[in-house]
Amino acid sequence: MWLVLCDPSDRAAVWAYEGLRERGLEPLELLSPQTLLDSSRSAHRIDRHGAGFELVLPDGRVLASRDVDGALNRVAAAPFGFLPFSTHADAVYAAQELHALLLSLLTCLAPVSVNRSGGYGLCGAWRSTPEWTALAARAGLPVAPVRLSSSPNVGPPPEPPVRGDVLVLGEQVFGAPVTEDREPYVRLARLAGVSLLGVDLRHPEGRPPVFAGATLLPDLRPGGDAFLDHLHKRLLDHPAESSGAP
Image (cartoon, rainbow, N blue to C red; front, side, top):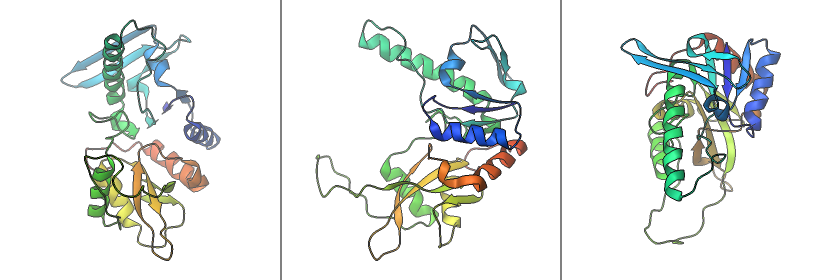
């Protein structure tokens, strides 16, 4: 079976789920992180041969990690707002525990996931703007200077980037037309250790576009049918991802 894991409000993920179903990917399940955590019974085993889980979902169905052939992982955070807390300390503790549990479950699916979970994020490592800019420069993308200061409101505010100009999935690039060399975008995703990445571009007047940011949760819809076709193929092939290479 295949999974699309996402927050219920993630319209791009729902769009991808519907597109994958239209392409005949079955059985395919759309699951939220809260559904995983709301299991009525769970078994989570870790031994020298690896890790796996078996969950009884709220509707009574059994989900076992061994039965998952591929997953689109769009889980950004563990939900915990539905739990009652008497103090802030209790809320922080519960959030950390739920995050750890969800991370452990997603790690069991990491070998067949787009994108894989890790210690710095549930669907890939989250990075600051300076970190992304440094990776983009290493990848060969034109970047704008980044100003760092310990004082607030120093310098002019940055221009708002256009979200999701370019989509990278594996070795393919989708989204807005990219007239220049596409390899730096693929190289950036590879350096970030993810197979799916959204790259934002800023378009200075009269000059070529420059890197403006990256996201692990891009809007997938600008990729259109070509993106869905490639995602479908990738999930069928379920390539195991290794750290640093998609």
